[in-house]
Image 1 (cartoon, rainbow, N blue to C red):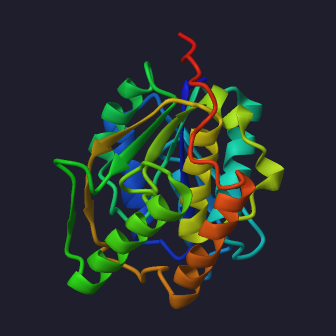
Image 2 (image 1 turned 30 degrees about the vertical axis):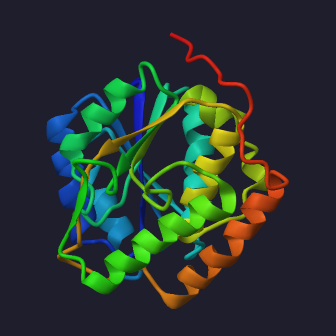
Length: 247
């Protein structure tokens, strides 16, 4: 079995998901892919099932309803742990994350528990976003750092690689955040547990096909949940003693 699992949540990504799967399979033929589809009405799940005859390392988890990004990733984490994968990669299905960056993230997990692709460290960037959305994203990153103390420069980013030990330490049944706030809580919990982390620069490219899942409700949820995330740690701004990565 592959040592690496790539988790990709989908909802109405019938154009993008198969294209992404083929790109990853060509780049990393030994990695396994798990698409977490929330019963997409556009036939994404069915398209991915057909793709499995061409790409046997593709798996599809058919979830019964649209239940959110966070719930999808939690189901994916449980499956990853049950199957014994050493490293799990999380990424978007809309081709905004470049598969060519995956090997760089994975190689860094040899010395780091959580490796995050970051738009806002030196060398990172965003392509084809309107200025208003870029400003909102940068403000969100600043807001998270101020309220929680989380030192990540791109806390809402969704492209990262996580070692098995870090996922196993998470209280998966206690995580309630969804949307972009899930990415914040994931990073904050691992930081507070003392796991090592690093941000690597990536270029995020706005989707060309399909419709963005960003909404006012997602933004409002994230604003409120940031305070809950800070409260969970009693507003502590220092993590537990640093853990050592197991070689």
